[in-house]
Amino acid sequence: MKLVLSILEHVRFVLFWHLDVLNGAKISRHYRNISFILENFSSPKSKALREKNLKNLLNHANKHTVFYKDFIKLEDFPVINKNILRARIKEFKSSRFINKKTRVVSTSGSTGSALKINQNQSKVARNTADSIYFGKLAGFKVGYKLLYLRHWDDLLRKPLFTKFAQNIEELEVVNLNDSYIESIINKIKNDKSSKGWLGYASGYELICKYLDKTKSKPVNSYVKSIVAMSEGLNKYTKRSMQKYFNADVVSRYSNTENGIIAQQKINSDSFTINWASFYVEIFKLDEDVPVTNGEAGRIIITDLHNYAIPLIRYDTGDVGTINHEATPPLLKNIEGRKADVIYNTKGDIVSSFIVANVVEYEGVIQGQLIQETQKGYLLKLNITNKFKQEVDIINEFKSYLGNDAEIKIVYVDEIPLLSSGKRKATVNNYSNNNFSD
Image (cartoon, rainbow, N blue to C red; front, top):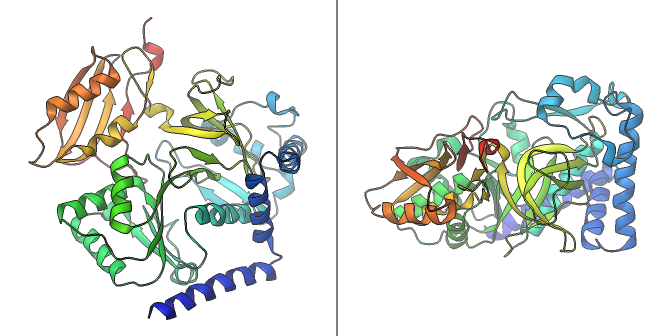
């Protein structure tokens, strides 16, 4: 049976690339371009290709959009965000693609109303090539089955034939109760095909907690890769997924409107930036100027391949840090949405992973930290009767937030999901602008 499945995987692999050739080899050309740029980053040719991609996009935006008609050099282009795009979307649309076939992608709208972005066909092919390249870095190959764990609404759900052709198993993160997790595990055990996981980190965490609770042994599942997306991946989940499914685990930084921006390498906490498809900058939290090297700030990206709606200096809403001393420069960490960043009592940013790793305590299922005032914090915990370490958790959090932090623990039955199916580890109800000197 395994031999037959291996043959089918190879057939899917060959068929995919054969169809690409028949369609003009668009994906393979992008794939080769991505590979060369990222794997020869310091070479003159790689630098020239990156500069050409940026220059061509800026020239196109200047000539064919209303919003960008007065800007030529990147440093002159303003920072934009979702609110600006929603209000002035027609001004961003390229006149070259008004009557051409484009793909429309829509954000989930979990932090506001949904935003619809047109992508030209070359951008669509680029995203596919990015997915193949970064999937391969994580151990996934075209032809493997993809276990895709996320929230599937009517817009995202794929037709049966498409799921068969792409070998995708849609798994609903909103339904992750014990019986559903058990059915997933049983199905994986009985499926001998090579496969990879792609899904929300919080979904993986629930699966691992179930396997812990049932005292499960490692699952003989033929999983070759595990990629976490959309949320921070804590140490417990990374370690547990690796233990139960015997595959390396990496975190991916991506969004719907742009694609894969960065991804961890295996056995690394830093993120390899997709410099082949994006130009990435880090700006100060409350000012549109670059930070100093190593300082946390807003992640600003320029999408080098979407010509239908150029997104230049687009504020992703996320906070991160770039290490420019590395070659190529790496994203050291990603703290999530600016609105969800937690500050200590002195006003310094604190990593969201202090909350993500609270599940390391015995009996803790989920946690969420809410900052209410400069020194006041609310820690929500979903626990079992095995939890006995309230004092230890408060002391640990004070070591991060400050000895003068006022931490109140509230026990809840569930940390609610957003409409997107994601779960927030942190919430900030107190603006950093309110901190006194």
